[in-house]
Length: 208
Image (tube, rainbow, N blue to C red):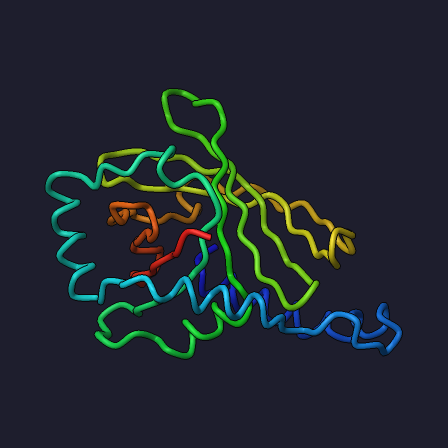
């Protein structure tokens, strides 16, 4: 599942679940749908100077020649989706990038013991709307010098705060149908990570 499909599906689920929030809250405004603290924290994060598409393409060419040096230990943690550039379009996709920010789209990598010589880790990607969270969980592998991050999701959960409203297992995809990121570059201090995702789009995450 690439990030475009992920966001479309999740957005539809969020819209469908909004009445549940108000029902469970009894009509009270106890939990605002958009928290100012989250918005301010994101604005502070985006003060970090981020590369434009031209720079990312340069870094991608360099990574293909000599590798990016990105290892699993350097990407473990929470990452917030910030910017998206569609394939063959120079300008940032402002609508899609804004949606990623509004829904606090996030991806988390957790290191697991290696399998068959590959760096294995857990992958958790989610979006939030107030206290409502939609979360996909699965596993991934890193291979190659650039490297290629291949992953799949086997669980989807809908949460209200810490309470799980819905949990459903997903069928594991065959290898040729699994999603992937081609990791391009990691900022020297580990503040941002860039990749070309399935479908050709370029993305940047900020360390949360």
